[in-house]
Amino acid sequence: MHLIFRTLLLLITSRRRSKLSIWDSSSLPLRALPTDVDIAVHVNNGMYFSLMDLGRFDLMVRAGVWDLMRKKKWSPVVQAEQIAFRKSVNLWQRYTLETRIIGLDDKSIWFEQRFVVDGEVYVRAHVATRLLGPDGPVSNEEILTAVAEELGQPKPAGLELPEWLHEWRGNVALPGSRKPAPHHW
Image (cartoon, rainbow, N blue to C red):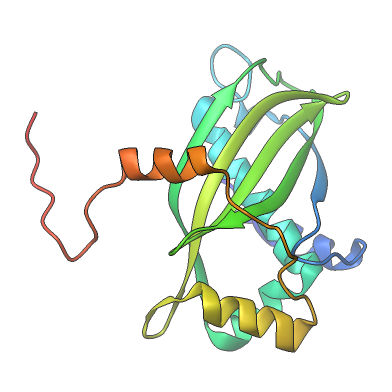
């Protein structure tokens, strides 16, 4: 909820920005605000994940996918995330949040997101996402068909998820939500 007002504002302002295809890259200019930083006066490690939501929403709104999702009653969820930090984004510092889809696996659509300051990557993350509909998870096939047919944005040829992300996902995956996941140290 801490970004609810920024998210609502973004959902409005992204409609006024240039249109994109869902397969394009979104570049969202931002500034590190006092609510984004921790006691060390740089963006808090957990806050990066919340800010990345803004980048994905910007891309979806500008590509028309947000309206398609609302029409079909689909909701986005994150399944897995990994992040690497190189430099800190400090209080009041301007940066851009770069967002693009880098591939798909059997369940998820994967985004790469970067926090860039003066053309230099400070932070990079990879996010596996899914859409949930009224009857449960929406297949990638159904999503790709809807995006191609209703928005005229077919999946580009050659869009392949890097093998290392397949391996990482397999190494960190938890059991599915319908399987037991007992806690043992």
